[in-house]
Length: 511
Image (cartoon, one colour):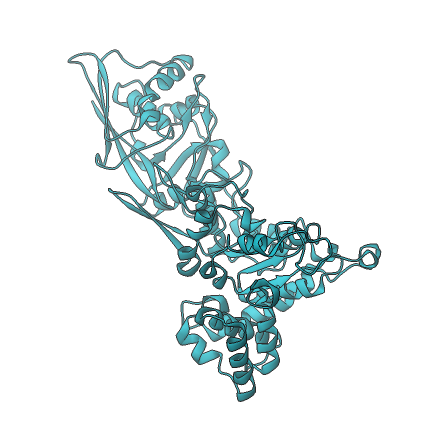
């Protein structure tokens, strides 16, 4: 008897429905699994056999042929255990299968028949709804994630026996429903850190506000203990809240990577990724034998923080250059190509020298040669892609001991939101959301300078020997500063402040 059960495979951040055809034939004995399964799927026969035995069923001693179609698409992982097991029971007439084709069935089996969570549930649920399936049956730990997809029945099962009884006896499974918008609104402003906890550093806070308002990349340069990491960790608290569309995009990537918690249904705050400097190229940008999203994609719609940036391998930093421009990363293999979104805000930090101090600090023990070698770890093209360079000075004792709290993130966020609203209105007819995304055509149109501003930026370009890309960055940042002041035109003091945010292009950095 032939039975068709439906599962799903992940490709990039999208899902593709897989038809699992199970045929039980009386003419012989054997278990044949075809359709490009990987080792985890091939081993499923052992898990299925033990699980069925422990719930009172068994794999029949007949010739069982299982085809996973489309047969030329590579299938991977243990998520098909439940689909194959139910298909075998239905094809061998051990259970009824009248409406089995109405459901996507996915889950990993333990030997006792209980179900383990799987990856990529959100894209699977979205695809199931698009293809008109009535519902989806999943391990209980995954159901909150799938339930954010409306117009799709999501059923939770803790054991394969519950799924068998659902089909065989009509015994209802637990149906999981979530009010997505309500849950989203309740958790949208939950931040563990606040700018009011930062003592001093007013110039750095201002730079952070400008960076958040325009979505600009920023690098913090300062000695150890000056508060670089503390400032970086608080930047999500002043960024605009995720829209529901952005939240779904971000959740989808984390779902595919298996980074969603069992009690989490939807990501409500912007991701903050902080990889260690020993990270590999593939772990940062994504890829591998079976491509997975990297840190830059996990930071999509959020912040990627590279602490002690010169300590990262140069090759790791250089592979970020293209994603920083294109806001997506393409992983190419001989048989397929996968695109992962990577629209993130880069926040980096570094010491001013190998000894950790500014060149003019009495504590600095680094020679000019050591300084040059340290700075050469960061290439010019990469630094050009970072809009704002800000020096973070050591905090004096008087500021540390001060009892008065600094400005709250909530107040800074209001100004950032106002500036973002101005930008969204300005670019409403373009596929652009904020100033960091604008290209040469938009810069020419929206960053027009008066004569004073033009002379100022001309002098800065000649004196600092800036590249054309650095010129564009200054104009973008100046446009953001003008937006924070709700000024329609970019004025000379906006340009002047933007030039100040090119620390690495001037003074003692060009040793």
